[in-house]
Every structure is written in C-alpha cells, then in structure tokens.
Amino acid sequence: MVVRRKVDEQLEDLQGKKAQSILGGGQRRIDAQHKRGKMTARERIDLLMDEGSFEELDAFVLHRATEFGLADQKYMGDAVVTGYGKVNGRITFVFSQDFTVFGGSLSEAVAQKICKVMDLAANSGAPMVGLIDSGGARIQEGILSLAGYADIFLRNVRSSGVIPQISVILGPAAGGATYSPALTDFIFMVKGTGQMYITGPDVIKSVTGEEVTHEALGGADAHAKKSGVAHFAHENEIECIEQVRRLLSFLPQNNMEDAPRALSQDDPERRDPELLHVVPDSPNMPYDMLEVIARIVDDGDFMQVHETFAQNVIVGFARLDGRPVGIVGQQPQFMAGVLDIDASSKAARFVRFCDAFNIPLVTFVDVPGFMPGTNQEYGGIIRHGAKLIYAYAEATVPKVSVLTRKAYGGAYIVMSSKGLRGDINLAWPTGEIAVMGAEGAVNIVQRGEIAESPQPEALRSRLIQEYQDQFMNPYVAASHGLIDDVIDPAETRPKIIRALEMLENKRETLPYKKHGSIPL
Image (tube, rainbow, N blue to C red):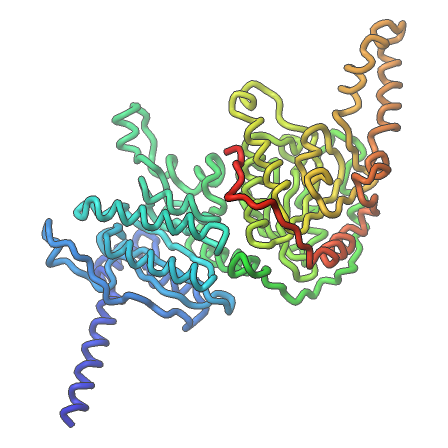
C-alpha cells in the first residue's frame, strides 16, 4: 500500500508538471495570444502533425538565469516546444516557439532544446520544421543567448542539402533571429502577424530618418513580392500550416531517398489537343505558361513556389504519373518571360534544391533572352545569370525540357539545354532557337545590303521572312542533335512521363571536390 501510494503521488506530480508545461506562460498570456489572432505553440503543432502522433521532448527543461528577477520566473519547457511526430504518415521533427513565455525569446535552454531536436532530425534523416514566433535573443542572458543562435545556424548549414528544412514565420523574427529561417529551404509567412527584419522601424528612423511600419518593412507581402525572402504568404495560420503539410508531401525525407510516389488516377497516356492552340500565332503575343503546366501535370495540381516574386519565371512542384517533379518555366505574361536578376536567382535556387533532394526537373522554355539595361548590368545580371547556368550544369537529377516557343541567345543555353547536360530536350513545332530574333539578326547581319537597296523596307521584310524560314524552327537544332524530338503538343504529357520513366535509374557523378565556387 505504501509503494502504491508513492507511485500515485509520483504520477500526480508528473501530471501536474505536464499541466504546467501545457499552459506555457499562463492562461492570461494564452488569451492575449489568441486576441492577436495567433495560435499557441502547441495548437500549431497539433495542426501540423497527424492527429495523436506528436511526441514531446524536453518538456521539463527550465532556464538557468538568476539575474534580473528571472530566478523566480520559470516555466516548464521554457519558451519553445520541441519533439517529433508524423506528417502525412512520415516522421517529421518540429520546434514551436512559445510567445507566451518571455515573448518566445531565445535563452540558453531554448537554444539547447532546438539544437537537440535539429540533431535528432539530421541523424534520423527526417525533415525539420520551425514554427517561429519570437522576440529574439533573451536580453537578460546576454552572450549565452547570442551563442545559442550561432549553434542553431551551424546546424542549419550542416543539414542543408541533407534533410528538408522549413521555417514558418507566425510572429516576429528580428535581428539575428532572421538568419536561421534564411538558411532553411523554404519560408512560409502569415500576413498581418509574421514579420522579419534585421533592424526594426525605430532603429531605421533613428539612423536614416525613414519612417516605415513593421508590416511594410518586414511583413509577408514585403518578403513574398519584393525581397523574395519568403517563398509562400498566406492569409491565416490554418491555411499556412496546411500548405506546409502539402509541400512536405512532395519532398523526400532526406537526400538519400527519392520523393514519395503517389497513386495517380490521371492517365499517363492522356493527350490534350487544347495544347495545340495555347501558343499564339504572333511571336510577340503573351500566353499563360501556368495553363500549359496545369494541362500536363497530374490532375492539374501545381504547387507554385515564390508565386508573387519574379513572376517572369515559374517554379514549383507537381506530379507526373504520381512521381514528384520540380517545374521551371518562363511566364510570357510577365515581361515576355525574359530572364532578369531576380528570375535567375529564383530559378537557380529552386534547381539546386531539387537536385539536392533527387527531384527530377521538367523545364518549359520560352525565353527571348536576358533583360537589357543599365540597372540589370550594374546589378550584376552576368553574375546572377551565371547562377542559373551553374545550377543546371551541376544538377545530376533527370532533366527533361520542352521548348514551347522562343529560346534566344545565351538564355537558350541557360534553360537546361543539351550543352548543360539536359537529358531529353523536346520541342513543339512552334519552337525557335536562334542567337536572336529575326528582325534583330537581319538588321545586324544585312544592314549594309538594306541601306543600299532602293526599297529597304521591302527588302528587310523579305530577309526577315527568309531568316525565319531558314533558322526560326526547331528542326535546325534537331538536325544537330540539340533537340531530341519535335513533338505534337498534345503528346507532351506522355512524352515527358516516358522520358522520366527511362531516366528513373539515372546515375551521374561530378568530379571529386570539396565544393564548387558558385558565383554568389
């Protein structure tokens, strides 16, 4: 009876401590969090994880600070909830910062909890998701909190290309706290509550005199549309976390595995005659490459990444016959699909992610060239464009491309061309590969002849037509083996699927090196 009573007391004590942990900073602060339209750290984990699968770690950890009155302010688990569970039936690790405890600030104990779960994720070969809602370093702990950030950054870097890392900005992330998300693969933000900036509005005003709000400076729209720091922006936390789950469904657990294949109900041999009419007769008329993609991929399901940033290029995930693929393509509806600084960097980063995690690349090409102008040249378009060359040339995953219309100049080479080890390069009959457009070529090559002609405009028109007939078609490139096949647009889906099936066991290695020197 004595033993039984002691066991009961121990269980009661355990339950009491667990209850304290679940309450975080207390009901009053939980209510304040809800009033701001924000969920608690545990509510967010419940949304992310499959029901009943979450296993918490380090629920009894306490901070160690004794100064500034902190010795009497201790909360079970401190300002972060950590652990693992399942997302879509697969193991996933998570840390969720608790704003109800010292504003989610990073203490030595919080950093150690986060580092422990990051190490477990890396060693277990499973994705790491950070749910971020923090006021930054805990000032009362000084250098120990700053050192904690360094420990986290190191693990972000060591896990890069090894396991998928996702950051979800659900509240503030300021100063050094922004660099851990920046080191991860994808950043999600919630509009109105998620904010990221190195220096806040008050500091900016004192240093530069510029006045700006928190949201305008570092909100979801600012980073999803202007800076490109955020890959996704959503209206609320529920929608945001649902999309995190969706993204994870396309990704492998780690760099040693293939992405999970789904059972597709969409016929792999499905033809789509409507693709014959997508590209306009006029080479200068825009069309929607998203429509092309939707008609080809399984069930029209395409998860666009960086949807509102550098919209002249499209990147994202889809499935073809159940197999996850990374999609890259120009968007003729924006800036005619020209490649500029932002588009080059956006596409290069996405290509490198897919290559790191064994996700085949499908590229849709309609590119008139690189963006001209002093702003682009002074901004380093040469360097940024070289990133995309580097990414495609380095990638060893299966690479299939489809030329829908234009591929001019250096931009032709950049977009997964045969010269950059493209495996299968297909073209529609509307495809054009040339150093430049017909008009520009004729004006340069035959300007003397045109100037001496008694009817210069008539001659120019005839020469342009001759140039188009001779060079502006995919058969010239196909005759040299630079295009593998010119296909009926209606057959695009089955052609790509067969190519991917053929390339499923592709093995290609790079020369031994510590790492390359990508033109950053």
